[in-house]
Image (cartoon, rainbow over all chains, first blue to last red; front, side, top):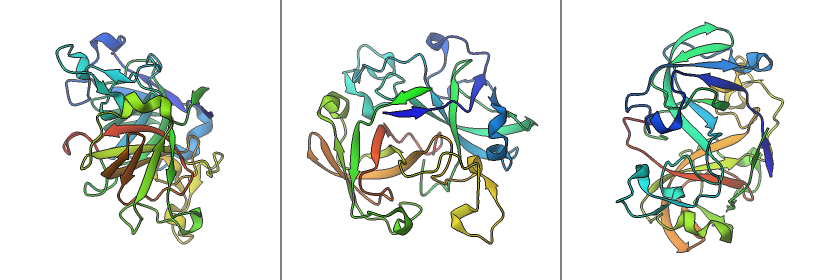
Length: 135
Length: 135
């Protein structure tokens, strides 16, 4: 067992998992990433225009779920969660690829099209590498 | 604070972080993903040929590091870790994009070009979505 420490949280108009889009590209709103002051040095080189991966802890997830109907479609056969992006999974880590729209303060970023709900803990930020290597 | 539970671990000829490539595409060897039996149902729909993201817990990382010389190049200026892929970061989660080469047993997969070292805990597996949406 390892301990994850939130480094910030998401501020979003999305307040309810049931009404959030399943992926950022499916009509998600812009959101604000608000960081804890002790991570200031880790944030210094992020710039407007950068594409980043926001890793979150999907705190409303059911960690006991191993199989799901993909995209909540009950007509679809059950699938193992490791072949889906279901938030319900043993370690509910979300990966959201977004673009930084603005660095509002040294501890606050505005990003485009993020499907995570308000209050979701942020656990890491990574730069997007080139398209051929990773997505 | 949230608790991460390893769902498996990596078996690799790479045994030393100092000699591991920094990215899978930089000469990393094939590796085996070995899962704990209780996650069998989560694994069922993974197939040879699938591209997946392997999320790992980079257990040898220094979690107190907030700025690094990118790619261990001491001539490069220090950067905040959130704009690098350094394994040293507050929550040392690795994201590795690999292709499944073989499903060896229901609990063991062989994957191509993985830069994580032998014994690294696996914490999640996700399918790769289409190129336009995420990487």
